[in-house]
Image (cartoon, rainbow, N blue to C red; front, side, top):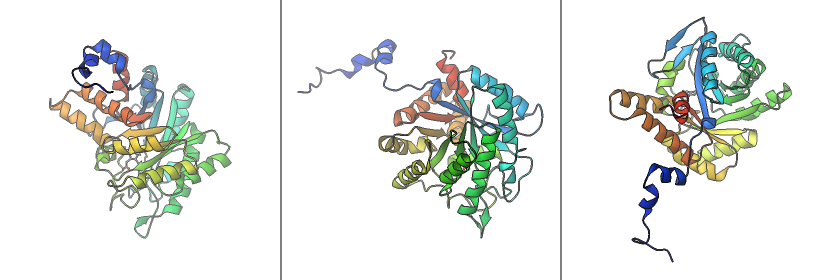
Length: 328
Ligand code: PBG
């Protein structure tokens, strides 16, 4: 029969750090981290992103330097976002061999072959209207868009991407990309799908960083409605059926319940995106002296792991890696 107080005293195992370490149920390790980076044209250029302190739009040469440090810190992977020179209605730089991300991928694969390169595949950074696809009749046309996304994915893989990560939320894009990669001889390249991506206000700082805010309307006709859970599970299930190797929930913090539900239902690795707004909130509050940045970072990342994520995309990746190395 279960004993209660005073037979049980839960505090015994909280007595000191040594005991707490022994009974700790969850850990974040450097292997879990994926670091998002922004690349732009030019040389020796780095422009700080005001909405995301410590993050920069970098030219390829400086991106290389940054990635050397990322690799030195033991972070296994980066995900790249491009800021193109010119944007057009069709987002053509997304699939250009001379696109800025393609250039970065070639350079990185050559110089730091062990670093896993993930290419975010979407059109919003590349379209003049800022939407994640091709516009027809004032809305994003699904079927036209997935063809372009498949071309973009293939060109990133040809340039050296190890994993492609479609973040557009079109229906059927995972299958379209899988087929395109397979027919191009890249059947071994994995897809990490942004499967349950919500129409969230927490992307605000990223849109400043990537210069990708929609010029009209919003993304609600393709990104998910925040109140929905079952729909997220359907999205994830369909992406797995279409060939996703890793599925993602995004944002992470306001959607920990979705991560948890997905973890209990699916056996594929789950990634969670600790997005720009979640990062900016901590940065801003700690700048005001209202909370301890390192402790808040740790608590947030551990909560994402505890909810069930295997991988965390986070702008804190370098800080966390340093902190895990015992330097904080
Ligand atoms: C592009 C994309 C977005 C993010 C990642 N890929 C923005 C959006 O959908 O507007 C957001 C990342 C972040 O906020 O950190 N589709």
